[in-house]
Amino acid sequence: MKTKITKVVALFTTLAIIFSCTEDMEYRDTAVSPVNQLYEPISGKSVELVASATASLFFEWEAAKAEDSGSPLYEIVFDKEGGNFSNPLYKVLSDNNGARNYATISHKTLNKIGAAAGLNSGETGTIIWTVIASRGLSTAMSNVSHKLTITRMLGFAEVPSQLFLTGEATEGGSDISQAVPCSSPEQETFEIFTRLKGGKSYKLVDKTNDNANYFYIDGNRIVEGEGETTVEKDGIYRITMDFSIASVSIQEVKSVGVFFCPSNKVIFELSYKGNGIFEGEGKVTFKQESWGKDQRYKLLMSYSDKDMYWGTLNDVDSSPNGAGQEDSYYFIKEYGINEGSEPQWNHKWKFDNQFDGSMTKVTVKFNGANYTHFVSLGDGVSPEEPETTPKNLFLTGEASEGGNDISKAMQYNKLGEGIFEIFTRLQGGKTYKMASSQEADAKFFYIEDGEIKSGDGITTVEKDGIYRIKVDFSNKSVITKEIKSMGLWHCWDRNVLLDLPYIGNGVFEGTGTISPSNNDNRYKLLMVYADDSELIWGTKNDTDEVPGANPDPSYFYIMETNDNAEAGQWDRKWKFNDGIIGNNTKVRVIFTGENYTHSIEPVN
Picture (cartoon, rainbow, N blue to C red):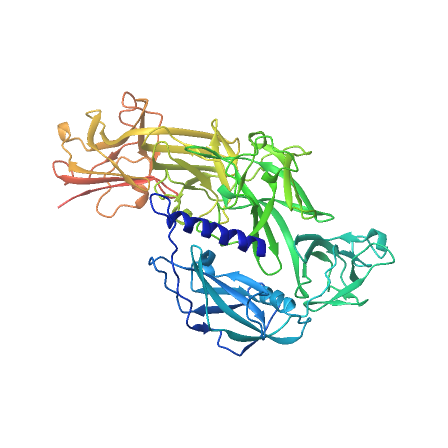
């Protein structure tokens, strides 16, 4: 860490020199004042350091002043009690790489400073601190210093160079030569993903022979000696051990899965294979978007108390392009489930094109110097589409009337078991899909080459329009027709007396004066498709009477006929009531519900 700090200071020093030169490269020194007051922590404060990754102590002081009105840089320096900071124990840049007049220093760093001051694990002692301000090559040490009493954590003076798990609870059993190795993700820290047997014991060793030193876990602390530890139940566990603070974290891993970003869910689970390796396979289908296919993915790990993502260590934004198993492209890092502005998409990889529509194997390795994963073609055969017929069907997506909010999805009319139909407006070039419900856990379907397919695929139409879509799950067929017009058709005149524009949610409606020749009161409904083919809709309950003042609702039920405007002039017609002909009238046709129907009434 000292090396990193030195490099940062050197960089700022170089920049300061450059900007402190005149045009003829004559260097002018920039004086800086010393810090006159130290605010936090107050002198004499006592702190018991704790083994927590988030534990820290806040330091703050009065800002210094630079001659050129620029911003000074700051270092906090520590020394033994009675020292004069000429040979400090430790230096720490203030926050924001030295630019702030305050600093947040972790308990783990303070523990190292205590060790440098000669304090043993768990021992209490006093150190002193002050601040050095700098601007360019000019530095000024504060004339004020504060005392800080710390109690070191119960860490280890000598940290083992390697660590293993052994015992009857472990994957290697009680034979120490078969002890399971831990990884070392950072200095003085060891970690292992492993299977443990509930109720049986395990312990830690630094060698796999009779000369090993032994350690054991007691609660959340590491203790040296030949004690033993147990877990309550069989399971896969992640054990993290920080010897610098003698701290232990044990988490049960409930599951690991491949998280497909476009669908915002795990598409298949990975099984634990031993030695920190999880592996599984499933079918991967890229999601078709208007701009192309989306192939982004990462990993989701579920612990007993929370979920966490594992994503790319190097924040790549490309497919692997032939990267091998050991390539850094596949290195992984853990991230919070809600981390960043777009957690669904952050820190993802992209599947190579060869995996689209294929059985795909994903292997994740939590061992070795770098945690990593790899993707390859699966050994199994792609599963058949499940023969699932939904009880209900809904239409959702940006092309639909309800948009992407599935709770506002448009419901299909159910014509029979597995047969559904909808009359709706769709936006051209945008996508839609079918869903089994309006809930977040709905099963999805899409249309490909005129067939229904199960999954998160999507469908588009070329242009904006009103469409009639009929799907039949018994043979996976789909019929989609664009509707050009709908109108009130007069039997005697054999023409449309009133156009009925589409107004949404499966309803066509128009208002106007109905003036047929010969005052004939017989009518039907005419639908014209985009290909100019025609379809007559007539009465579902054949009648030859006017509806009267209080008609049965079934009088107005409609059904499609085999007729068009050139045939079937008189069959399956309705009759206007008195007062309709010659007056302003509203006609509404409703293609929703168990029975399609219509209404016709005068408008004042």
